[in-house]
Length: 161
Image 1 (cartoon, one colour):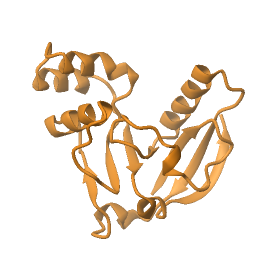
Image 2 (cartoon, one colour):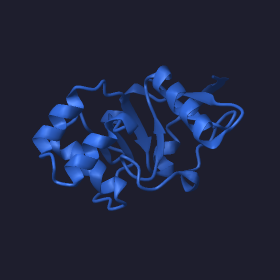
Image 3 (cartoon, one colour):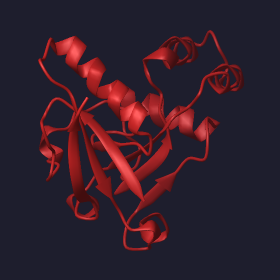
C-alpha cells in the first residue's frame, strides 16, 4: 500500500515522532494519506502559511497486511461516525482517551472546522454534525503514533510540488 506525506522538508526518510504536533485529529503522530493530491494540498498549505520557498511530498509503502496485524494497537474509522467525531474532538483538545500505534480514518481538515466547532459549542448535535460532514469529500489519513509503527514505513521517494 502506498501513502504520502506533505511537508516542507525535501525528504522525510525517517519520521521523528518528537517533531510531530499535539492536538491533531488522531493525536500526536506522523500523518499520511493514500491520496497524492491531498498530500500535495497539505504541503502547499504549509508552504503558504510559513512563507517557505519549497513544498514536497514524500512517498512511502507499507505491507498490505499491517492494518490487520495483531502486532499493533490499531483503530480504523470507516467514515464520519459518532465515535470518529468524539475521538477527533478529544484529540484536538489535547485530551486523547486511548493510545494506538496506528489510526486510519477520514481527515477533519480546515474546510470541516466550522462544523466541528458548531458541534463542540453544542449548536449541532453529533448526528447533525455528521450529516454536514458527509456533504464534504472526506480524504483518508493513516497516522503513526509509535516508533514500532513508524518502522513499518518504507521510504520510496520525495517530489517537489
